[in-house]
Image (cartoon, rainbow, N blue to C red; front, side, top):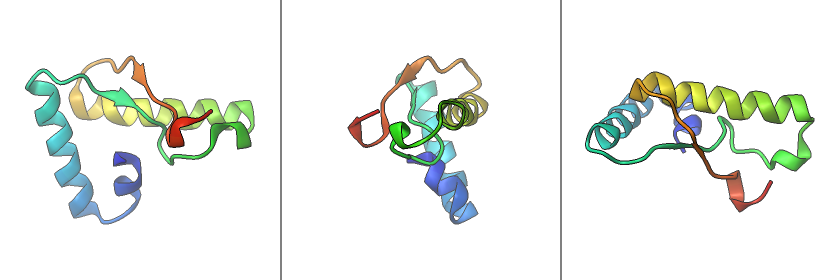
Length: 77
């Protein structure tokens, strides 16, 4: 839940970002999960696409590579 940490305390967000970058550098696959963890079906198509894209972009900035994996927040669209 990196997205929520980005919104919260900055020190925690930096720590989480370093951890994600270290995992990626160690060979772990990193996937997106939206920025704010909404139930996507409750959003307009444009808002859902933006939340997904923003979360992916955040991760790509952290790991320095394309993020192609995705999991639905709360396990549902």
